[in-house]
Length: 246
Image (cartoon, rainbow, N blue to C red; front, top):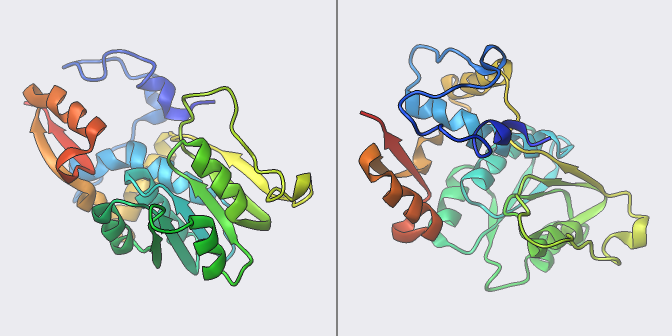
């Protein structure tokens, strides 16, 4: 149910010098010549999770997509939407550095939710219809509700955000068409498998995506606590750190 999550976040030891790899035969994949370890590492989470939101999003060729929360996962959702054939990709993000990088990864428009209502901005950009696919990449009740509101009737809400707090996730009744708008909700988290890893690395090999721009900070293993703290606070414009062993 939780994809690769159950092999890392729910299992101790992945930061040790040696550790046990669950279901290794099914999940290990050789890194092709020409790919760095840093590039390959992005396939294990950012690419796999970001891309599955587009894969599950039922994006029609030339369709419209909104990505709510353009952090590292959301940035790869932007790339995934373009790879799946989206004709318009809208990001929803307030941090200028992330908004700028989202544009570099292919977002046609970035809406700052602190300055305008993102649902209204998305409807305006789509001629009042709403997007074919809304991707929730943050894990917030507010953004999930906005995804439902921003999606056209018959569209898809693709959720990859982790909703770790609260008892319920709200669905706005009227924007849900009082239950009759034929809006589909799909959920996923970091699908693994050696076959998938190989395909993701192929996308890097062939230049379809280059995730290295997301590495804004680098740390030695001795400074890993500092890296985690900065990831939590997002200080100094951190998007993604690289921790090197040895």
